[in-house]
Image 1 (cartoon, helix red, strand yellow):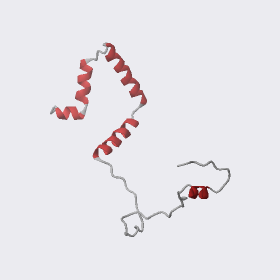
Image 2 (tube, helix red, strand yellow; image 1 turned 90 degrees about the vertical axis):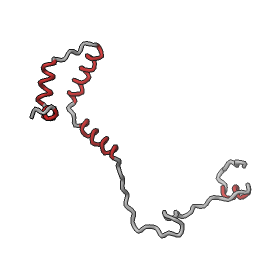
Image 3 (tube, helix red, strand yellow; image 1 turned 120 degrees about the vertical axis):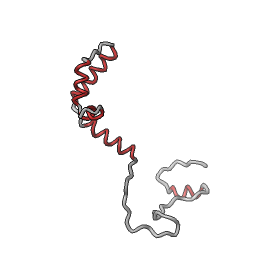
Image 4 (cartoon, one colour; image 1 turned 135 degrees about the vertical axis):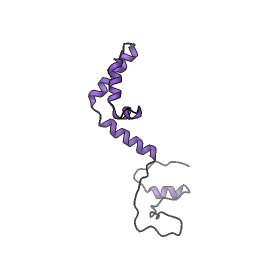
Length: 109
């Protein structure tokens, strides 16, 4: 195929001279199987898997967290990484027992 530079001439004529044919716009075809009438109205829907729903739920919970908590978690992460994290075991045990879910799991309710 040879490309002919255009200087304001008739591109369709130049294409015909090269043995090709000019492209003409075609009307859009209706969606569906051949011979099938197009649907009167279409609706869009989105189906989310259980994993997707869980992700959305967790993301919403994360977005609702207090930013100061993230700062505290980062400080604790740095202490653990440096080997300097020494939690008060009695305070941890008391906090766990104060949690209703933990107390129920231990049969203390």
